[in-house]
Amino acid sequence: MAATSGHDAGAANDQPAPASAVVNGAASRKGKSDDQDQSENDKDDDDAAPEEANGNAAGKKKKKRKPKKKKNATTNGATVQSCPPRVPVASLFAGDQYPVGEEVEYRNQNAFRTTSEEKRHLDRMNNDFLTDYRHGAEVHRQVRKWAQQNIKPGQTLTEIAEGIEDGVRALTGHQGLEEGDNIKGGMGFPTGLSLNHCAAHYTPNAGNKTVLQKEDVMKVDFGVHLNGRIVDSAFTMTFDPVYDNLLAAVKDATNAGVREAGIDVRMSDIGAAVQEAMESYEVEIGGKTLPVKCIRNLNGHDIIQYSIHGRKSVPIVKGKDQTKMEEGETFAIETFGSTGNGYVRDDLETSHYAKKADAPNVALRVSSARALLNSISKNFGTLPFCRRYLDRLGHEKYLLGLNNLVSSGIVEAYPPLCDVKGSYTAQFEHTILLRPTVKEVISRGDDY
Image (cartoon, rainbow, N blue to C red; front, side):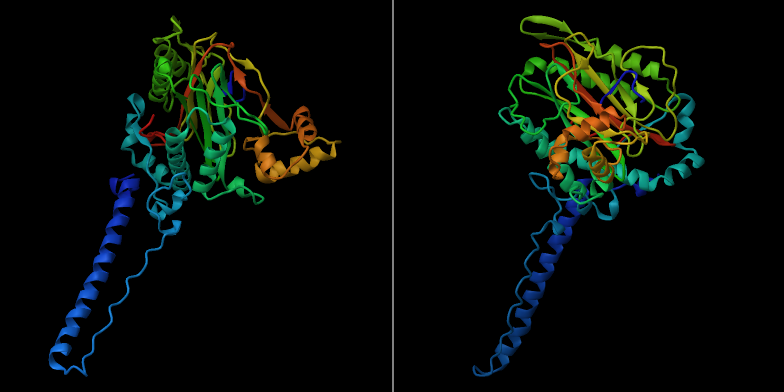
């Protein structure tokens, strides 16, 4: 989830088995069980043979074959993900041993961290933190794999958003309909489906009839959280190869930012690396050759528990910010490229909101605002939400109260962020953990 400029922003044997290993292992055990059943049946037949040979016809007795046990077809015994994804990821990985993200050793003056016993000890103390993040990252990978394979032109944005969100809720095991359940796990923030010149913070509100077209460039940005540990990752989908270079530029820029990021690295150095990668590309659209520009007033950001935007911003252009990344921090490294001005402004209808962590304690004179704030606090806390989520909880005619919460400074509104009309924007994003021993790109997958 984008932040605008100026916004406050162990040992090899301990590594979790990859999904394929879990599946194959389960299949192996299942196969063994079948063989054992058949072996017992064959033995029963062999035991019966001497009786038939020694006894007369009247005294012949033949043991009945034991019926084979029927396999349980419920999700409790599933070893692979369904389509659409509905099998909780926790049931696919025994003992909460989820796949490790891409681990990258620190360089230069921090190279010692990889082998430091002190840093390894600190790393082991983060077990619950890492389990939540790896769990959420695997949910994100499995849901986005389904999305990438199934999203097609002709679908409505509402249909796409709800498909992703239904998958996240099912795979985390948190439907979010019971009071407080969404705070335990589920959507880290609403599914962003920003089209073309719109770069970020757009999700359909109720009644939206927008249909995805073949010529559209759609940014898919959604978050998954377990216990407030938010995995923030995004990708861009197109259906026309004319946009390939735009996507390549942004993906390259995001990877440049991920490579540069690390403990004691200055924000300005990351921004310079991103800009150099991004602006080395150009794209030809409609017979015109266009440079790919960084959207200079959009940034990456640190992530803290239950808050998608922390206090630090990660620029995507060269600047003078000397703030450093520090051990133990979590960052969303996201970059945006544009064929337009490379600058976004608030536009279109607002859909994203979040209660402020430092919300003032003010008297609310609108009764609907008081009731709505109580619901927001119990169901979302400081996690971002959208209007569709309030609809899903059964709220009606809440806009007056919601606007009152925004004007009172209790809830922050996040309008869609758009470049000039007629331009095209793209986004790629990863979440990284600056562990004491290594940098872990927690959201890395085979796709990006």
